[in-house]
Length: 167
Length: 167
DNA sequence: ATAAACTTTCAATATATTTTGAAAGTTTAA
DNA sequence: TTAAACTTTCAAAATATATTGAAAGTTTAT
Image (cartoon, rainbow over all chains, first blue to last red; front, top):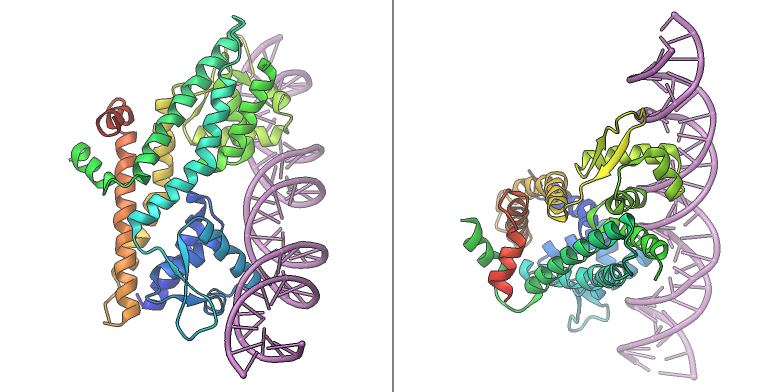
């Protein structure tokens, strides 16, 4: 396989996998491109490389910065802004886990807590509702605790966990 | 909060959260409805309750069965088919982890393995590409190993892990 | 202060995904 | 075997999401 082919494959695989961690195609592709680039890239270079519009590039770079996985860098003597991706996959996982917890899990946990607290009127449907939404609440809490551990500073939690439990 | 209000909130929260585990709104809502229903429901009842078409209900029930989290049940003396959800959240997590690994993670791991094996021509961009795609491959492998552990029969892995590491 | 270089915004447009509903298909009872 | 009861399929329509590009906005150099 040629470099060019491998690169295109990486970018498109990452792009279509984007939904796995809740981002759109262009956003994932920009991230993929920066992730494998040895040097920071300008907006011009990114839109050129991916064949997407200036507006699209601008908006998705912003979104990636909101996720905390792409940063602006200043290249001395250049007026343009340059961008680089977080390169450390451990740190990348941390940021993604942190953002997904904040954006999705925590709001859900709050709703589950509220609705599982309705008064038990003794009917079968109410009993089942309370039981099941409580179980879901516990599960979401557990998932959130795991994510928080991934996010926390403790080094290599994932690896340590695996060594202990999988070997 | 009234039962009806809590129920609608659960169904719509689950519906909009569907994307978190890669399913569409109707599919998530049907699942939510069955998850809190004390009894199996017919297609008629589901489409009535959620206000969706027969075709939509049929297709999404099929998809939920493909995911292994909804099952047909035979109600004696009834000609219609009835459906019920997996009620145990542990088993639910297992099925979802298993399916997501199979559908998304494993194909990605394969691509990453292939493309990170291109020949090193010594250039900076090739070196960076190989380094970064290898790191991503390792991460994906680790994630898949975790999912497999969740999927495996070992009871309460999540809980045990949490007790050991989070307390 | 001016203007060139660059970035952002957002209404319009394009694309992708979901939903509908009626026709076709299947099963069951008599 | 017939027909009623029920389910599935899928082309068309509706909806939701992503993308464009040009105008407006901002920054920098002189």
